[in-house]
Structure formats: C-alpha cells, structure tokens
Image 1 (cartoon, one colour):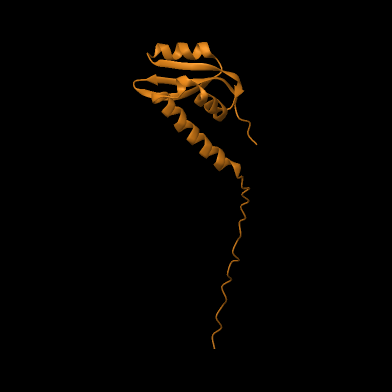
Image 2 (cartoon, rainbow, N blue to C red):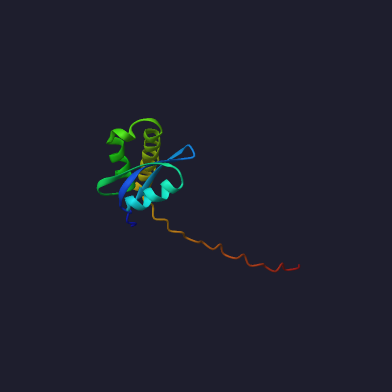
Amino acid sequence: MSVEKLYTVAGTTTINGQTKVRFANDLIARIKIFNSKGGQVNLVELPQAMTKLQALQHLATLPEFNSGDNGFAIQLKIAEKTKIAKKGEIKVASTAVKAKAPKAKASKAESV
C-alpha cells in the first residue's frame, strides 16, 4: 500500500499563457521560483496538510479559483484525480502461472 504525499500549499501558475495547478510544502520558495520565470502566481496555504485531491477540492471552494483559467485548470485536475482514484480503488492481485506444455517424444516408426 502506498502512502499519498501531503501538501501544505496549492494553487495555480500561469507561465507563457499556460495555467497549471501546483502543489508544494514551501510557499516562499515556490513563489520565488515562479516569479523568476515571469509567471503569474496564485498560491495559498492550505488549512492542513492535504493530498492532491483534497487540496483541489479545497481550492474549488475558494472564490479566486472559481473563474477563468484558474477554475478550468482546477476542475480539469479534479476530474483527472477522481478518475485515477476510482481506477485505483480496485486492486487486483495478479498471479502469473506459467504452464509448461509437455514435450512430445518422437516415436520411432517401426518398419514392417
């Protein structure tokens, strides 16, 4: 069983017209990185450490993430994460069984 990583910061960034959802644990470091790239940064501290899906659901409740490209990017990511979560709910244990076919013995033909 894998343990999901928890994040304390989440939000969106827009660099060269492309909006992406970002997750981090250090707000100041992330803002410095994205500001140096000349992008628009909209990150917030989460009320508690959360998984990516929980953070996305929280962001969807905030007014600054409900419109325009920010809202679209978050809704798209929620749909993606929900699909992955549903897919991961069913765990199938695969047991590979190798069956060896018996080797056919060549029979000697008797001459009559």
